[in-house]
Image (cartoon, rainbow, N blue to C red; front, side, top):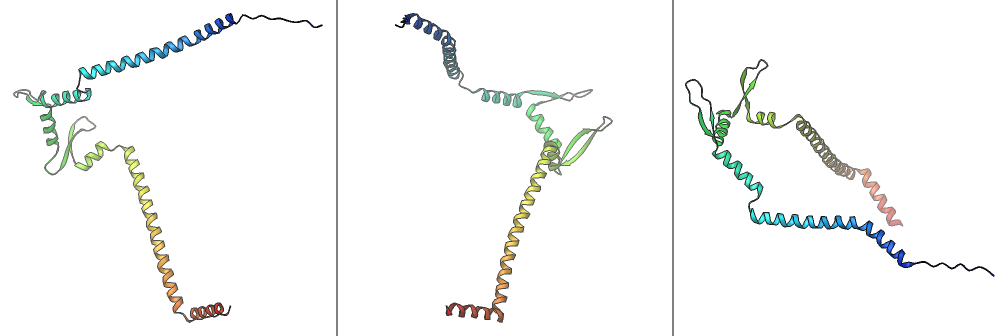
Length: 198
């Protein structure tokens, strides 16, 4: 007769081994999740408390501070041998400089250095000055390209409209000429008689 193999296995120890392996794998993951959750909650509570304690927004505070500096901080300009320096707020100084750089004729006076280091004053129209100061060569190139593309599209559309209009007008004129012709009238009457014969 055959031999019988009997195996006994302790399930309790296997269960304890699985439990320990899962515990080792999940403990760091769970710990990280708990830390992230606590951190998010604490951060929210701190921000809420700060917003409660400091009702003014930082941007508004900085804007007010800069406005105060611009309108109230005084600076001294000029002075020298027999002359006391003039005292202005930053706002007054900036406005005076802008007014001084704009001439009565609408031209902007620009003070530049020549190649020897001497200062010279150039007068430009306001649009020229804005273009020179604010529009870079990259922007000019892009704008020129866009203007060229727009011009091509407009010309294409105008050509299409003109062609369609011309085609329609010529078709009507050709039909009117044909209808007035005796040959057309004969063809028309022959077609009519063929249609009535059948």
